[in-house]
Image (cartoon, rainbow, N blue to C red; front, side, top):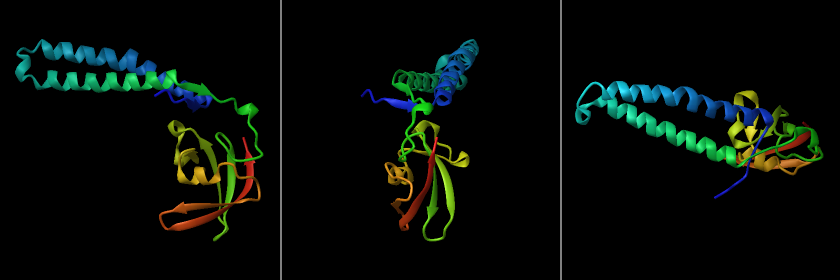
Length: 157
């Protein structure tokens, strides 16, 4: 299933850097570990060899996953974003209507989400409730404890 994945320029570069590291640093290290374990004798009772082969399998699966993500990647040009409503790559300032707390979030692709950096996934319940809303509108978002209402204060890039 070829589903397009959207990234910022930095997010795509991070993905490329990680793939490069796995291929050019991790893969040779595991190959070396396998060779060293093979040199220790009987492979049928060699736990080091089995562990290295398992690590190799996991690494190759991760490499394949990153390569697939790169093949589906599209970069979003942040300079061309429309800030009349909330959507992917916009920053939004919202106010909880119950306690007047203001929060600022950037709506980002799933792979770039980082709550500590105030970047929430476009697929998260909060982002889903905010998408398409304009300044002044109220977003009603269902959370485990009920429904929270947030007023859209500002939208920027």
